[in-house]
Picture (tube, rainbow, N blue to C red):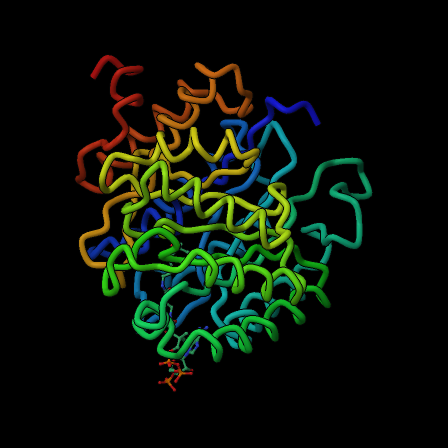
Length: 328
Ligand code: HMG
Ligand code: MG
């Protein structure tokens, strides 16, 4: 793989929408996913099998997964669709739908292609631990060790179904309840446990956007010292303090090539008061292009989607690049 390839994981339909107060119509969510799939992005986080009492906006994730499996969404590249599952109950709900549609997706055990030679999407499960006890309690209603035991069961069951697993660690560079005082060694230790349990990738979440360039660098040095390979790490920046692209540059220098972002800069975590959106995908694509990196994503198409979805939600378009591209 040439060193200038960068993978962007589009988290808009999940991280971007989960915090919206007003129920978003299923048709809008599906249109968003269908349009994103046509931009050249290869992974879309499409929903979340969490408790609807905790995150009501994600309640129709089953219908979204069914739609993805039953309609062949047009996409220029082989696609992976990712869904969060906090426990085996969530995975079970997703697995029931997968079992009912066995020919429509590819697992890690078979190739991403159907009997007619057409590409089939891959499915991915995402678990989400936290680096601090207070965030774990607020987000998952349990302590870190209990959450890790639950995630090990989710990872094991996902692997038995042939599904790729990504594992988030949240609040790695700052916690809404514990401030800057997040121990990078703790992050590395949780990451190691999740990788040893079978996770394919760790996504390090700067949930609050409190990350800075030197602290991002210190965290990644600590991960390397713990023996965690850069190719097993994704960075998940929120742009609350406007530091996401600086932290991205630092991460690139450390060899990271997978980044999470959200079209139109949508987002915010329901259990992270004051956190604004994920770094905008349009800004990431533009930034990568200026560095000679290749995301495979059509910037104009992505900018159109950012403008459309933010208008649809009655929000401002938070992508500076998207607005510039569209002359808005
Ligand atoms: P709990 O209340 O301790 O769970 O919540 P429980 O086992 O006692 O169950 C309570 C009720 O929820 C029961 O229903 C269960 O059946 C049901 P009842 O008997 O009361 O009718 N339930 C479920 N229903 C559907 N799907 C499920 C499920 N599990 C239980 N999977 C729990 C514990 C983990 C469920 C809850 O805390 C939860 O759902 N948390 C999710 C919070 C969340 O989604 N946060 C946002 C995602 S993380 C994030 O955004 C950060 C990230 O972007 C990275 C970053 O930026 O750092 C990833
Ligand atoms: Mg997030």
